[in-house]
Amino acid sequence: NAGVTQTPKFRILKIGQSMTLQCTQDMNHNYMYWYRQDPGMGLKLIYYSVGAGITDKGEVPNGYNVSRSTTEDFPLRLELAAPSQTSVYFCASSRGGKETQYFGPGTRLLVL
Amino acid sequence: DQQVKQNSPSLSVQEGRISILNCDYTNSMFDYFLWYKKYPAEGPTFLISISSIKDKNEDGRFTVFLNKSAKHLSLHIVPSQPGDSAVYFCAASALPGNQFYFGTGTSLTVIP
Image 1 (cartoon, rainbow over the protein chains, first blue to last red):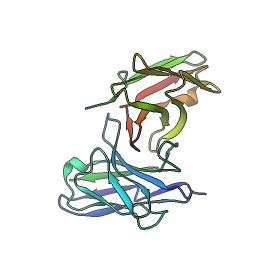
Image 2: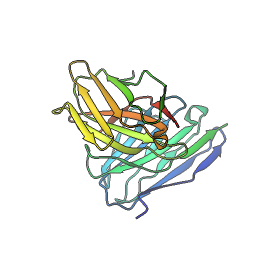
Image 3: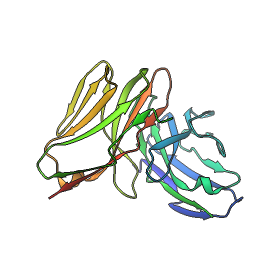
């Protein structure tokens, strides 16, 4: 049981490039989340999903897109990378909306 | 606007003593609160939760207190151990939403 896995661990992007951050969970959780954590700040919710085919915006969705075609996977897409997107990105999953969230190890992204 | 605030960025405590981490919130609709612990280069891990119908919840060395009138919660760790050294985040959620709002974290150092 691997829990929540994220790839890559670290990536450097040039301004304007695009990339997809991968997130997979093997706990059969319905809910999945993407957060970003900037230095000295708390986690901010980017997008979340309550089940396959259903996604919704969080606090800071601009510049990102998500899809949820399966229960297990919840990729996060950056279309035109900007320096403001330099951050650590965490994916999480939970059984329900008020349940404990289990986090992946994070992806550190640097946009130059 | 930060709805969940942790005003102490850091805290140092001697091993064996009590650690008290504080968290304040502004949204009176928050009804569920959690504490997460985070080690460097890892994702946050769930520690303890409390619902707004309670004012205290205990789990081993960890106790969370909720004061709804003051919009304040605190995490007590007794006795503190060096392995407790980590960043602690509080998070809050309001019905009917599925979003959790995180504080900025408090870095706890337990000195042997």
